[in-house]
Structure formats: C-alpha cells, structure tokens
Length: 263
Ligand code: ADP
Image (cartoon, rainbow, N blue to C red; front, top):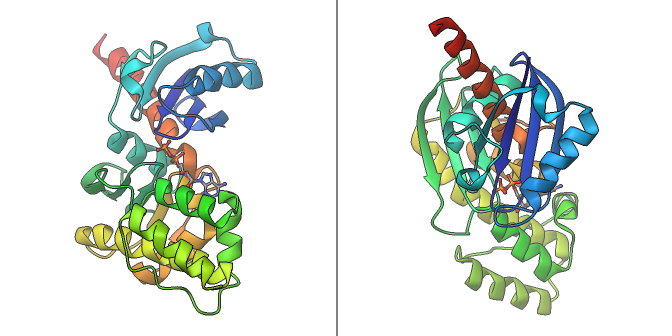
C-alpha cells in the first residue's frame, strides 16, 4: 500500500511516497516553496520518477506552511507531528530533534516510540533560520551548498554580534571590507545560528541522542557549530530535508490502519 506525504515549506517543496508505512520508495525536493509552482512540480516529479500513478496512492497528507492550499491532500497535519514521525522513521534512536528550515527553527523532544513530548519554536525572526544563512551566503557571493565546506578552513571564526539579519548583514559587509578571510566570516555566521538555536533547544534539557533535520542540516558548518554549542554529536540522515514529508506519509499510513480497525 502506498501513501504520499507532501511538505510545502517556505523555501522548498518536498514529496515522499512510502510503501506500507516504512519503505521510502521515492522522494523529491524542489527548491520552490509555498505560493509558487513548487508543490505542483514536486508532485509531477514524484509520479514520473516512481512510475506510480495517483490512483495507486491510498492516502495523502500535506504539511508545512502551504499545507492548507494543497488540493491533492486528503488531510493536513501540523509540521511538529510530521517531523517527529519522519525523524523517528529515519533515526529511531534520536530523543531530540533540531529542525532548521527556511523560515523557522524548532526543537522537538520525542518518546522512545517517536511521540512528540515537548517542543520549542522560533518562527518570528529570520535569525537562526535558513533565511539568515541564505542572505549571508549571498553577501559573501558563495553558493549556500559551499558555505559549510568553506567554513571548515576557518582558523579564527569572525564574531557576528548582531542576531538581527539586517544588522548582521551590515556587520558581514564591514568584515568583508576589512578583508577578514571568507572562511572566518562563514564560520562566524554558523556560530551565530548555532548559538541562537542551541539556546532555544536547551530549554528542553540536554539530549541523550540528538538529530538534526530540515534543509539547514545539509550545511556541515551549522552542524559542526551546533555540536559545539550543544556539547554532543549530532546525527544527520541524508534525507533530513524530507523528514516532514516522510512523517506525513507515515501518518497517512497510520490513519488508513486506524480506519480499517474501526470498520
Ligand atoms: P522549508 O521547509 O522551510 O521550505 P527547508 O527545510 O527545505 O525549508 O530548508 C531550506 C534551507 O535549507 C535553505 O534556506 C538553505 O539555507 C538550506 N539548504 C538547502 N539545501 C542546502 C544545501 N545543499 N546545503 C546547505 N544548506 C542548504
């Protein structure tokens, strides 16, 4: 039985087809978020890549910022419960997840069965989100995928004292004109994000086993800086950006099972 999960984020659209609630058959990430053609493109790509037709999908759940305008979905679900389910499928040993997306950051505490026990969230300010990193990468004229590898060469991370994206941008421009090495500025940017997000995550207590999800988990510089701030290693699955969509597909499967049991 196939279920479909769609996560329509602020920056990207993700879709996942799951077989029997466990096996990831195919996943796609389109770099266009809510209010764009991203969701339509993600669905077109997932059917084309998998060879599975819409009629073969038993149930579809949408999550993310754009979930309410997804006509394909049978149901919508909150990002928090979908992320919890998705991470539990990818990394069942994790008891804490830090998810950093394009426009928000969340920390989730999970039970051993992957139930959401508690959470902290920042969706009010771009600082500590992918948006902050995207703005800074643009100022440095470095592709976002290169920011992590670039910062690995830093010997003396620059200090970014402003958390506000607008002020931090001016600070980075000043450092560029003072000829601070790019690697040090990149490392300073990652430290700034890590400090802010770790401050929020530690309100849930110290993790036993910490994982990161969301597109920012693909940034090795942020992961390194977060490990330092949190004082523990961080697990990152290659499918970390699709955790919400995976969780939505898991939830879709569980809903079908529950409906069957009621019959
Ligand atoms: P949302 O769900 O809010 O749309 P995502 O979880 O997809 O956001 O995360 C988007 C963010 O992930 C981008 O703002 C960017 O900073 C970061 N990102 C995406 N791909 C990469 C990559 N290959 N390397 C580093 N960072 C990335």
